[in-house]
Length: 248
Length: 248
Image (cartoon, each protein chain N blue to C red):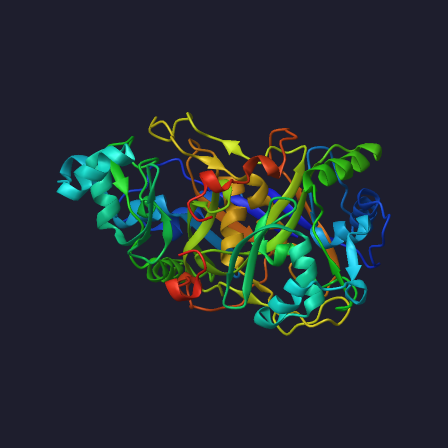
């Protein structure tokens, strides 16, 4: 049996905040202890605010390209400027939508920048450029509090083929992103040829079931009872390149 | 707090089995009661076996097209024949991989047919052609046992941009596939413009955290404590057409 608890924080995350301490204390206030081998997922907006990865729209000077695109995308030029600045490659630009590979290597709409839950639309939060390293740092913060957990930084994304967004991992530490069942046998002894579960994305998706409400101040989720393997491979290890992807 | 229990079944699912009864009895044996407003997820292989949606490879006569493709895909011609038979459209055919839109409208590799956990590689299970209707039927089976649940039929899929498979919904009943937060305000009163959580896919992903092991006979999962809206819109309502998809 797996249990998932929302990490509710009544304050506002500020630059320099220790997210491990905030997580442990917020959960404790609700009678829940973070224990060894738990998984902690944190939303990228909470992480980006703690790291100071935010920028005020009023401080952004849009490039001519951003100004030209802003009209087409029906977004403020300042927002488009940040989308371009955080991108490494434009994957699709069509019908008012822009899909990029961002600096962290994640393929998503708008380079994964966020206006919501930052400060009411005046500032944007952007994703960490090396989210796996940030996850390792936060994992270290937990170790400093004497608890060994897997850490996943999440963001919710549109995806091809289906409407609606799903929460996914953008960075992880201490938890192997893939559970590899290739070579294992099924109920009948048939050898599985393809089965590789992307468990960090499944843990991220599961987390949004408790963090999902827009205005209730959840910064992430605590997952108890899930057995995983240790690894610091990170989310980077499961990102496809153009060469291995049929849709890029 | 959300709790997720694996539905472990020691027997083998046969054509005609009542999955609601099996679910309720299997969980009860482990001290867990299915209650109103729970969500039950069932793997498509269990569902297809109960419906008799399986076919013995030895009974399949491959078409010339299937024979020609078999070499390229490095699969038995009989398997390729079923992939083609279950497809409505070939989306990608590249590097030994075939992505189709299957008869149920789902875009996935190999039309979503499965060799594993059927009978040791002799037969294949294919997805229901109308998975939402099947989900409604199973929901009715639960109602006949006096419990009102949301039902999700799941399958695990490769996806663009990332390696590894993630479990997703192919059909659902009694649970609204999308939780629409557009128009709601965030922590700061900023109005959310895009947020539509694909919660049936997140529930499916969460389920595989307990059903994932290949050889332990889990047919699905029971989710307790998740608040959802009622709807019979089904998964069909969130499938993108070519026109609204940037990657088809």
